[in-house]
Each structure stands twice: as C-alpha cells, then as structure tokens.
Length: 300
Image 1: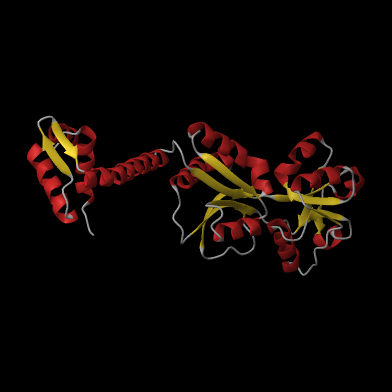
Image 2 (image 1 turned 45 degrees about the vertical axis):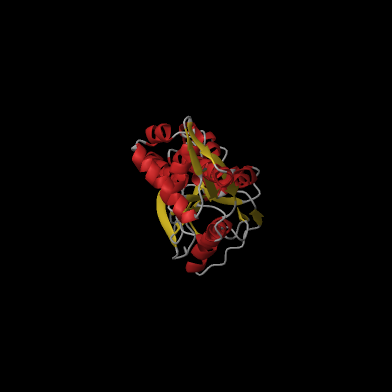
C-alpha cells in the first residue's frame, strides 16, 4: 500500500485537535484542502477514519487504531529531524578520533580542548595507538579521523592533509660530550647504545628506512614503547636517544642533554590528518578538521 506521507501528517493533526478547522490552521492550509486529504486517505485505505459531529470530528474504531501508529511515527520523525538539526548545529553528535602518542602528547590536546569548549554537546571517542593501528581503525570504520606521523608509505585510499613538520634529533647526556660540536657520521653513532622506538611504530619504521637508505642497520640497544621515556633514559646516560625534538626540549634547554648533529642529518617528518576517501565524514569530524586547518599555521 503506497500512501503519501503528507496524508498521514494531515490525518494526525485532525485526530489530535478533533477539528478540521484547527488542523487547517496548524498546517497553514485551507479547510477544504484538509477535507480532501482525509477523503483521499480513506479511499486509499478503503475505510472511514473520521465521523463529523456538531462538536467536530470523532475517530472511528479504524481511525483510532491507525492514529495510535501514525502519532508514534510522526513523533519519531519529529524527533529524528530535531536530532539531525542538533547534529548539524553540533549541539550533539560524536567525534571518533584516533591519534598517535606523539600527536596527543605534543599538540593535539589544546585543539581537543578548543573543540570541546565550542561544541560541548559533541561526545568524543578517542583512541590512542600507533600509526599502523590508527590507519587500520580508520579503514575498518572504527574512527572517522586519524592524526598520524607520516610513515614511509601512506595508503592511496586515504586522504592525507599535512598539518605540521616535525624534526627528530639524536640526544645524549654529559657522558657522551665528546660527540658535541661536530657532525658525527652515522657509522660512528651506531657504535654507541641507541635508545629508540619499539618495532611496529611509524617512528621505528622511519628510522629503519633512513638507516637502510644509508646502507646501515638500525638496532637500538633499548627499544621503548613510549616516546616520553626516551629523554629520561638519555638523561640517565643509558646511551644516545633519538626522539622528536619537542619531547627533549625541556632537558635540552636545561642543559641536561645536548643535541648531536649527524652526517647525514635526519630528514623532517610530517604530522597529518588522514580520512578514508570512500567514507562520508560526519559534521563533527569535518568541523574538527577545519579547526586543525585554521590553527595549523600557529603550529609551524
């Protein structure tokens, strides 16, 4: 049975007010138009729905039965429209975000704070993981937006938006002061214990690839799961650390560590926003990306 939804909308208002005239006023149409619509609905359904009385209209038993369902359906449609409006206005919704430890630790939290202050009704579902895990979650549809540090190869089915250039550095404490003030060949640097990232992270893949391009094998003596442990290990002179410079900046400025220049130097990397090309982005995700784009110049 194919019934115009507008017929039900008119019927619902007539039943609600028990009046053709009040329904017409509420719907901003004429009374004859309301009467015609009800008659057309009755013809389609093959039964009388209303009975006219001196005091208005009364539902027939069939009309009462139908009204119970139609009223619930109209209320759910109205609720859906209101929910959609709230989502589009970011009064509600969900931001599903995945990011690496480095991006969270260094600069992402201020953006999340800004987004939450602007749109307090939007819930956040945040996943902290490695770049490969973040990309996997994106491909599987478990998150809508990923922030990663670009690995050697990025999948072609992803949209990639560069946000910020970062620089990794080699760092060491006073016990390695003989390496200060000169460009240290990579071959010589590998003679010392190296403190680096564990296997399976984009940072480790980057370093493995960089050393391999120089004909060398990168084998850290200490492979750490989190980047914020590398500087403390270097401060305690376990060896030469390699980490994003911002992680080591406090210790460098305080003189507890110094930066080692190498020949060749480590190339820069890029923090990127990644999204799936074949998936529609919710309004909350689009607005968060826009916020990052607006603020990326301040991160340079």
